[in-house]
Image (cartoon, rainbow, N blue to C red; front, side):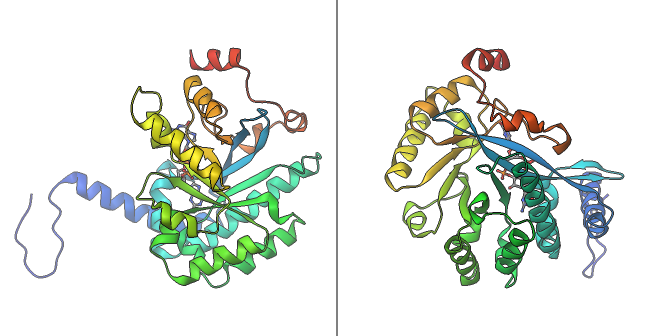
Length: 292
Ligand code: C2E
């Protein structure tokens, strides 16, 4: 029950607030040792090229298996790691693991595949970040073009010059840069044209709405057309239905990613021989089966 206790003390009004606060504390305390206790792992979600249905590469997505709280979504713990600065060592671990994975694939002759890694705005503000990227690429003997760094609009709109400098240096050095979650925030086209990015990832909230006979489908079609004219590539995220896949293909979207084509996969279930044959996206019969 709420009580007037005076001073600067915090008063919790209900058990929900208390539970939420306890969970946050547990996450914050658990994050520090999670790295050396090897509680993180990466899942890899395939990205396909729409023109020929072939595999373009993977996006690495972090997972945290907490000993008491179970699997925690990155949407929940990444903001906390950003707040307490642990995103820097965690992000470096992600980058190294993802590069190691891609290196493993290249031993099967898959030299064309790319690996996308999410980068937090906080990492971009770390003065040593760019050098860390070069070191890791060198460590695994990887070509710079095989790495794609997914940055958020937040990184580019509200952050210091340091972030823009880092992005510019990375791009100039050969790494691919993708603007993640385009459309989810308040994207400004004017701002976009100034950014040193190769690729735009259309947010799944947009893709979800193209099922409907709504104005949004015209918006998505127009965005794809515009990006093509600007020389940018487009990845559609969150493709779940055959209808979305077909529309995106018709509109000239370059790449697709989503549950329809492949869930985020544990590395142990990624079948290297399957990758070696560069399996095309499911044919329409198979898509129908999956969406049935
Ligand atoms: P994101 O970069 O937009 O990643 C795509 C998210 O959409 C992933 O969620 C993925 O599992 C999910 N997804 C993929 N296909 C579909 C689909 O067809 N339908 C739906 N509804 N969802 C789909 P996840 O893995 O929970 O990651 C959430 C967010 O956490 C990511 O969004 C990214 O912003 C962040 N994140 C994940 N891994 C990392 C990381 O290593 N570092 C950083 N800084 N952020 C990360």
